[in-house]
Amino acid sequence: MAALAADLAAGRRSALQLADDALARAERAAALNSFIRIDADGARSAARAVDAQRAAGAALPALAGIPFAHKDIFCTRGVATTCGSRMLRDFVPPYDAQVVERLASAGAVSLGKTNMDEFAMGSSNENSAYGAVANPWDTARVPGGSSGGSAAAVAAGIVPFATGTDTGGSIRQPAAFCGITGLKPTYGRVSRYGMIAYASSLDCAGVLARSAADCAIVFDAIAGFDPRDATSVARPAEATAALLEQPLAGLRIGIAREYFGSGVQAGVGERVHAALRELERLGAVLVDVSLPNAHHAIAAYYVIAPAEASSNLARYDGVRYGHRTAHARSLDELYSLSRAEGFGAEVQRRILVGTYALSAGYYDAYYLRAQKVRRLIANDFAAAFAGVDLIAGPTAPTTAFRLGEKAGDALAMYAADVNTVAVNLAGLPAISLPAGLAGGLPAGLQLIAPAFAEARLLNAAHRLQLATDWHLQEPAA
Amino acid sequence: MSLDHAAVRHIARLARLAVADDQLESLRSDLERVLHLFDDLAAANVDNLAPLAHPHDQPLSLREDVVVDTDRSAQLLALAAASQGGYYLVPKVIE
Image (cartoon, rainbow over all chains, first blue to last red; front, side):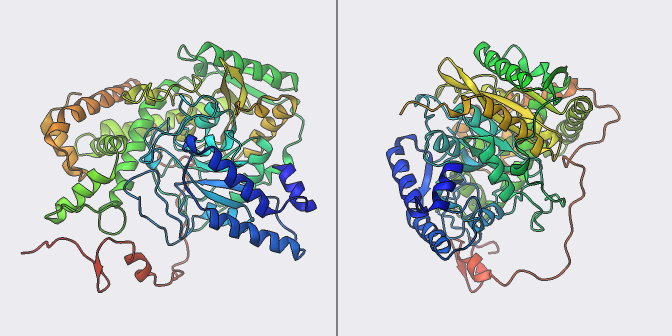
């Protein structure tokens, strides 16, 4: 991205040329199905506006004229926003999400909206109403999910970065599967305003890019307090891009032994250990840590997230916006048929699970207990961070699995989230970095930081990337 | 935890999701498997722990009680499949 910005600043390329090139790449890579909608006219007109400002001598931000793509979960005024669902096939938002506003005002040029698991519920992008996405490293494999379209578009070189959201790993796991860098910020750091809700106490907007340095530039542009999101954190965000170069001498990295359990593919474990040795060579001190309740995270997450989803998705009633059935004879049928027709199988399953967990007689055993387990998990992290600066492990236990391999088995799919969901329960920032290839497919290293320590996370990631070339590896054609 | 068809119908009713008869059994077995996953929660020791609802235990921020939004009712009503005279249209409720 720095090279593109330098070309733009020196007048070697125009924003319009960059947008046209990116649109051409998107067309050549159409078989990946990484986009739900490409807005070529919108991209060209945004690019022309940046070129005009530059020609007029304006001082422009680092992102001005850089092409990118938005996950189709962010509301874009006048551009259809489907959230990967049939429910919102014809939904054209009347307003922009905060993340959309921020990137537009920084001059970044959106190419369109990327594919995703329906309402961000999935770990493979196979739950999209607009078809599965292929992994650019092996088109018979999934790109991960739910931000699978964003990850595939970046890995395929269509755009240098894309926005994503992460409720249980939806930025980090696809970043790992596609061999790119994915940052999930601290809960509340980036406004959720205009981001279609899945599980509000876990949902987090972030970025997928080719490097930690690029993630830092985008994060700095989107982070900050927003009064329109009641859970937005009212503390100033640091400029992380300015802190990337600090040496790592003395940085204490905890190796969470629970993240290297028996489910971790041997090749992935080897790659992650190789990355950790490299961090050690750069001056970091590796320490063993334990997160003794890590194995409860999947159960707690799959109670809390569906419970919140069942409440959030109650808004899709066939009345105000979204799909409306043509077969209702009563108001009750209007609700229940519109929802049954509009939602896909996994979304319906999670709504039912969440409804059950919140229903009379089960609330204490499920939802309340899951919230207590959530505190247990957050306490584990707090105890570990008393002795270390970062915690490390594999982002996902395996490399990308085959399309269809887990599609019929919800529990096997949920198990793929084992190393990521605890981070959301505790609201911490984390990043997934390429750690080289295992069996020809990318493996991901996850680094986790205490709340609001994105700068430390990006600094360590950047120093690792200065010393290695794993993040520069690209899929063949 | 085991579920029967009546329980699935009850949950689907609470969630306002229409379920066809031929979907009941597959939904029942799906849900039962997911609910078994939750048995794990009973094994965690959560004595004396308060539930955690917001990751930073942060109270929700409040804003000044002033009008900041303009009237966008026409724009919002335009998103509905059916509206008339400034109202959303639904099937008749009272005969």
